[in-house]
Length: 390
Ligand code: PLP
Image (cartoon, rainbow, N blue to C red; front, side, top):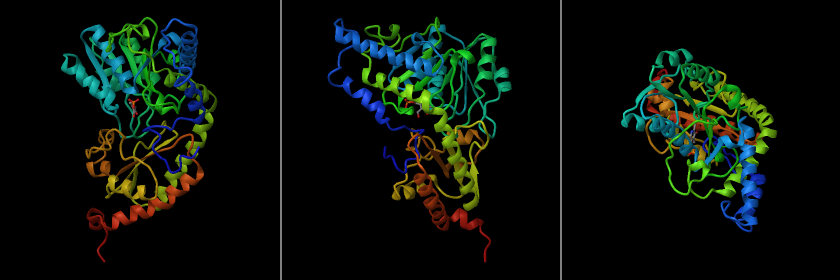
């Protein structure tokens, strides 16, 4: 598949052609509503349930613990709002580097009267289990900490955080939108209550979110209607997307480990070369464990947006910060939480690779990035002020 010069896999992945092929009949001859009575509908229902089982297997859950909804964002909302509103009151803990789908949802609950603590991260991008222990209160009902960060790729100590939360008697939710498909995830082994992920980050289609909800756990619905998904998410299921996501999960079970090995080598190669050729580069989220596909750098004294625009002229597609906030000129809240100065957060580039990245892409990036940085620095007053006057 030809997806050349694309370095924004954390924003979205292309649909794998094998996934698309599996989906196509569900738009045409197999269009039936899985809730209908007749044989063809029953067959569609069976395919949908097969996909649920594949998705459950990918994260170590059982099929009845997987709920379908409209996006990763909705999954985060259902987990957080649904569990908190079911409890009625109490205190919630999250971290400063969450995706807006979690941060803004927790802030909404704060407006509704819930207590909220936002944990900081250290200068490498990690939440400290000690900080979590200190933040827990007798009335803490929910802790929501992301598994892996979309901007810098830092992987949180999820097993430890979940264990501390469980021992305290609160629920543990994790936004695993960037973890599922990139890392082995086993909800049972780790003891997670709620986990959110999204089909379009795992080579499936956009518009499908998945929520793992531990068996027996109660949530309040956000959407009301015909009672689909055990009454927790009414609305006729997006069958083609679900079947596609099931196929995407099946492929990942076989291919994920090899993909990660290849991407890690390229990530490390890119990092080494960039540091060797461009002076004054900061690696944001510089320590393991971090996602094998993600490299986030700040090229000091130049603007990330200008770099993006110039790289785009060579057909290179990257992000500065996350896709959802890259339209705003505010510096990334993740980089600020990491302790970066505003100017350095503004000069950041996120390079995220995936299944269809190849060696030619890497060479293209390494060919164009250093001269782009050098040209922008020539016209940067901040850079010129730094240079010794001759
Ligand atoms: N959480 C994280 C960590 C993400 O990276 C994203 C998407 O970028 C989301 C949640 C939202 O997922 P969706 O785009 O499916 O709503």
